Image (cartoon, rainbow, N blue to C red; front, side):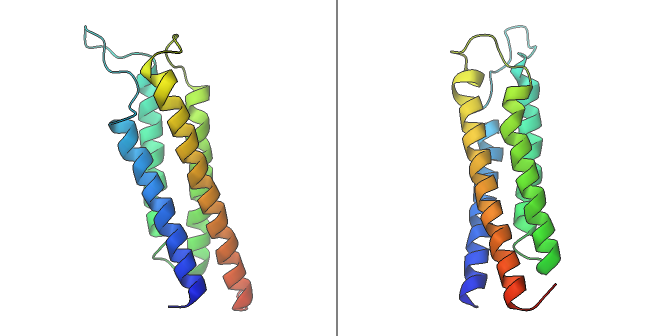
Length: 140
């Protein structure tokens, strides 16, 4: 395996691991506020669900990008950038709880934004490497 291909694969692995971390984290260790005593959910529950599904799609596209050829790899990486941008914005656009001390505002929001931005940075780096490899190989 060529050095550039190894680097491309490494970026894909990092991107996928971070996406999985976001997916698992939003369900477990940095989940938004839990249900109320009456069983209903706080306002931030929908935000958590939206981030979870976005992270699921990010995991799918970043994982697929490691195993497909040229242009499809590039498209998967671009979609991952767009999804991670959406995941980073969701906690600020969707309604969360009123108190800044609650789990959703104190833990979930910052971690979602940081991890999603890291995925976006790695995906942009992968796009740059894929484009460089395509140019080097004389592909359009």
